[in-house]
Length: 79
Image (cartoon, rainbow, N blue to C red; front, side, top):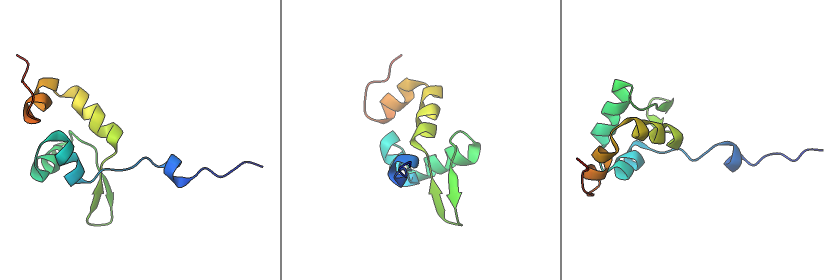
């Protein structure tokens, strides 16, 4: 008999807009713009709950110039 997989292993933790804003050093409105522009995939649960998969955030960050994120997060921008 096979054991049931715990839910914590099936579903990765999802990020809120505030989580993504904090991780990227941006504002909530910037994250919402990324979602609206199609740059960042988001999942909607009901009318208000919006969640972002960390894998989608990492994929977007790889597409964007890494120097942009370093500069926004207080690091030195690479020319």
